[in-house]
Image (cartoon, rainbow, N blue to C red; front, side):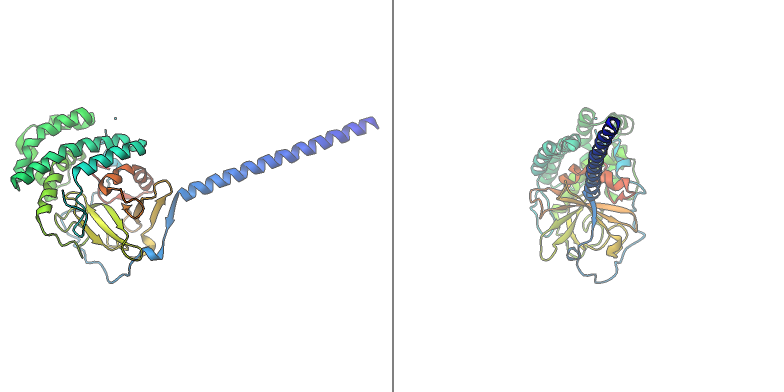
Length: 343
């Protein structure tokens, strides 16, 4: 009888132990399921009908244009580059001052610590570009040869703040004026595919030159195609503004910083119009930026939403959101055009 009582008490304890263990195990499973749900929602694919404007007709595209897309840009092009103007926003584009870009880069370097090295390097480059733009403007200079005198200072800056690979490229390839001019011409004319390091040096100088020339012209931004209506370069980012139901999308030139209006439901890479093949990816922790992808040509473009962050400067915020580049390229999308840092 006593043995039976002991057995009963032991069975009661075991049942209680099993019960509490199952409860704890269930709670762990519930917690894990919530975590997985949160991760899946962190980067999510959305299609909001009100974001899209009507499709009026097929895109007419010059398939033989000399500015052909590189087979692979983005992170593959960034390794040698990443280190260890004055027109207000309007219908013709956003030409924010270099001071505004520098201040924004310094601000985002604090709030986006993972991208801080990139932003600090960009700020140094913007400080270099500022007097280049100003001097071209003051002299009304339009000759590409005028940029040659800035190469020594640029090489010195990069040797101090850039990567060893960039410094080595300059030492081996940028010693003669002929080599420097050839690099500048290839970037401005767009006909030659350059080494990423070569492209970096050329773009640092050609950008303020192109911005100055664009500031002199009367650019018709409405109804433009997938490339810049001024210099024919590809866009580095999209810009979303709140105008009407769902707002409008503008594209930001990677070279002269001109902005031009472009339909939302239209891939600037291949002209795809089917919204089911044009997914939008959002990250909850980066609400003012998104990935506009195309499942037809497997390219993507990041867009900066000024309705969610009115202080954003697209050319700078595009660099700060490098986490979206990593996610997009991990999912087999190639960036339509790299930024100044080659990303």
